[in-house]
Length: 278
Ligand code: ZN
Image 1: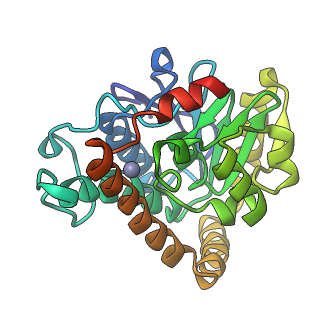
Image 2: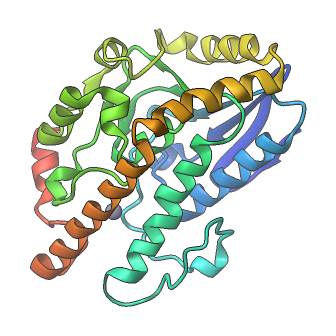
């Protein structure tokens, strides 16, 4: 099966494996709402295809994803296939934008995290801020040696990106260092922290990911589903969902503070701070 969207592709690189590819390399796979909505549709295709036992999320180009497309945060929500019960997307004050982020960021990421099939992120180049929101909801992560991971948005006056699972992904100390300093951690650091499963040379990334996916996909679907849900349930028992929602509320305290103080969602000096350290 092959289905095409504007910013996402779908194919099957191996038996029982469905692969979704971010296809906006000219913008370093920056995520606008359309890309996220298409990505959600592609996950649905893979999730509902009974022949698919494992889903790969890959990306075209040099970088996996540079994060959210900050030039495109106010699209017409009626044009998108929303999946949650959020509404009032155009309301004044904090209401409308919080609903947008609850739908398009936290809502979609949590939905993908709970797809009842194994998912693998195949990652190269830079993963910045919102880029982590596509990587972390996946079950396994294979990355290339030069891949780096960062969430520098504390410079914008918020706590971090919206899918705030940092302590669960990187451990509390490394999570705090990433957030406080904005520093990009290397693939090797990510491996040592248990944040990724495997690091391979760039030219072996596709084959290594496909090989892992094909290996997993030989197992019975329901066994994989039960294994995934059991691990996710353990994370939930450790408070993952509650912590995520708590951090999302604090994230919007940051946005509201910035609006009151600077008249914008983010501290306008943040970009110069981040660029000066790049
Ligand atoms: Zn935000």
